[in-house]
Image 1: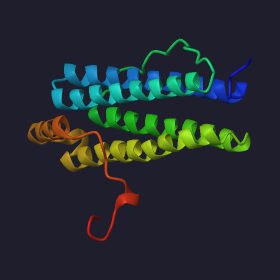
Image 2: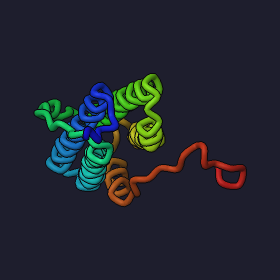
Image 3: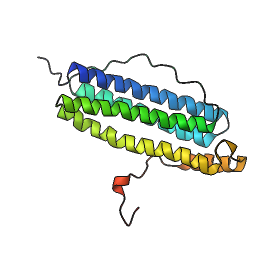
Length: 183
């Protein structure tokens, strides 16, 4: 008896996203190594933690496909992009990647809606929410760097930024959780 509850199209889309998350993990690991090499251990630690989070996302996709009776396919992972030339390029790369990932997540949501695969649609809502957090976090990195002076930041402001990111938790407050008392 076939116990696969996923269409071939959705199973492939979920496997592709699993691989996209693994690729993201490699990108952030690569950026972290670059930052570490430049002496930004706090920024590197932040990127290493983010790399692990992306890997955890890939495992969520893997487990979901397996739990629905499918078999995820691990593909070759493309090499990460070349090292950034500046912190601005690094943080812009993080943001761009998150926006690209959001687009891919939305395509799976659309596909699950189109196929009336409500289990997958429901599963994907966690990722929709997560991408709000991820994009907010990436945008805040860009903002923090701009406040520090961007590519013309002083060593002192970069030192402070590095220390701040080392101690920053990964979670970001969401707009939908805001209240008048807790903006």
